[in-house]
Length: 251
Image (cartoon, rainbow, N blue to C red):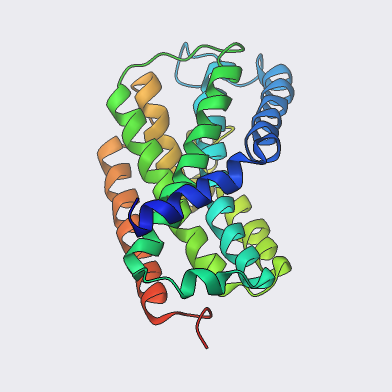
């Protein structure tokens, strides 16, 4: 192994050793969302013509799980290493900032996509979505996982305590995820809130991902791709710069 591969392997082992907490628990949470929202709203919410509400929920829950777990993996790893003091051992190694970036982002993507696959396999028993455009499914799954994993690196570098990281996740990541159209089509919202939703980059990730299943979306998948790609490049540039200067990890 070279440097970044060894660090990547270490990070994958970190979450796989406690997979009951890092993989199984998020899958169970998504199933509970499916049972509650699917049961209560199945006969009251109509989306995309003949698409059942339960089937509509599946892609949203999958992408929500991918995003939240990709962010949680990279951010918690960095904060935990800083607090426990074992980050110094990585700092002593001849790893470049690019090695750090690819290892932490890659391992977080691995966790996010693993959880997403688990959520899909379980929730698809409740409502089987189609696969109208599989390429779009893969593209938005990878880009979404990469974007939130990179954002997790920034949050992990910034946070010095667990409560700071929790605040970032609870007051930024969670609201943007839940208000991105996971449980509804934004066309069901008043005009003002539709406009607000279009300012949320998480909406484009979920809407583009859902297009891959149904061939229908609230906005063009190309627009979603442009927004998500631009956001990823911007966030990645910030993360790489912070790693290069050793922001809050080098005295």
